[in-house]
Length: 112
Image (cartoon, rainbow, N blue to C red):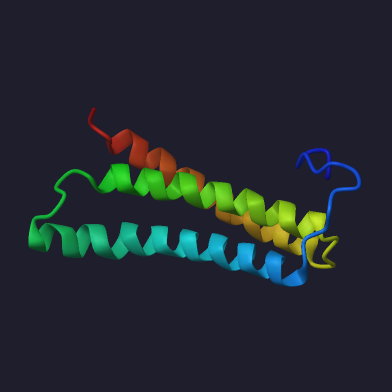
């Protein structure tokens, strides 16, 4: 798994607080993406007429950033040899698949 995640042998291990920080950021980004997709875009943006048509672009950008942080979190758990690394990997893989589906949906709605 370390080779798959490109974690070099003898790499410095992140502290528990660093792992928790990356974990929190990545889940917060995924949550923000969902809140934006299901609450802000359909309800708020049309009501105030702001950014008409920009929703899918913003959603795609948020998805891309969330995916980067999801992978960083998995790497942090594995770098730290955290005892929860397998369960966190499973959780993140679920989140990554969900965000990839949302990203694909956003990309199909982008009109360039």
